[in-house]
Amino acid sequence: MRKLLMPHSKPVFSGPSQQSQSAPPLANAELVQLQVRVIALENLVITLLAEASDRQLNLASELAADISPRPGFTPHRLTTHAVAQIIHLVERASLFRAIPLS
Picture 1 (cartoon, rainbow, N blue to C red):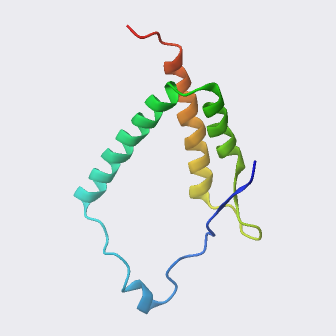
Picture 2 (cartoon, rainbow, N blue to C red):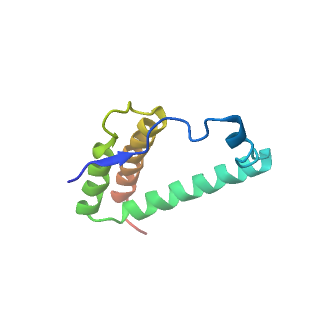
């Protein structure tokens, strides 16, 4: 399996003129809406993984194991957390695989 290379951890915007062109900060209501959507997507992914084949579950686990920074760059903490989340989602889905449908 090939290694997935994650984007470097250097900031995208480096100068003050570039920062003024970035997107405006999100309002609290927008952040809450994003959280709700992420929770919904997590639960949807768990549901789909619960019905996935063993090969698909192994592939998801391999994906998490193969995520690494590009050569010459240090691991970014958000990438490390994303790997942990993938593993956690697969593990949570396995709990539902054992429950028979009523």
